[in-house]
Length: 306
Image (cartoon, rainbow, N blue to C red; front, top):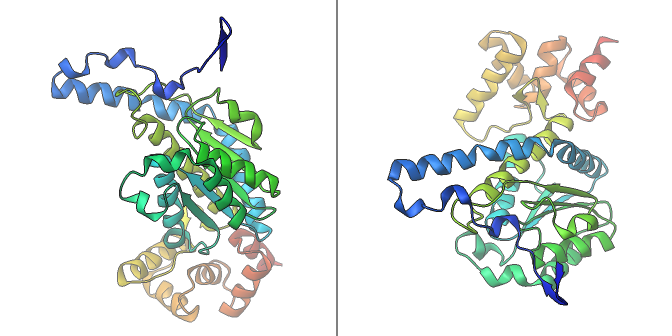
């Protein structure tokens, strides 16, 4: 906000400004339209790289919350909120993350995943009420809002903070007024969109990159990755069981028959089979070492070496 001759003037968010590089978009050839969009998209990873320290701080807060038995919540609206739902939904099958670890809340509810419920994002009271109903002390709440001003998201963040939860705001405005209200502020300088105000484009791409990096790093820190391999996945079909065997072969250098035997002896527990193969210890000892190491493979291996 700024003052101009005594009148309050609302300063437009960067996502609402016109992009000088796309002003003739409707006069361009199809190939040139795509080239402009692609050139703008390439600015997004650079914007994410500039806030990695802040993302790291958010990861550490999430890891601390989950290790202490608390939860991570995403509160968002529109494209940002849908990406939060998507990120949370993909963690259980990818990392066997418990269903309650990451909880996604979308303005307008489940119906807003398939169709726009635009007025829902303006309801600060609903955001606050939803946070009051599910966020506990020690949880972490991540607000997802392209402009950084979305009332539903800000209401949830304020209510969460009042309940003793950590708070993070991810938005596409590095100068968002709400930056001072949260524990960690992640303001992406993605700039004006190719189509003015269409935040499903660069702003949403930035949100997706941050969310993917954030949740993946949390899973790594919690021991659900060994080297660069998914080791906490659950085989729900033949394809995934084959992937488990491939992971064991890649991680241990063992032949396929040995990996199949180890996985069978471990009752399908990939991480237990991995520790047994790497250490040469019996399955029972490997499982116990993992339990004592809070699921960290390298720590469990160190315990078995002593």
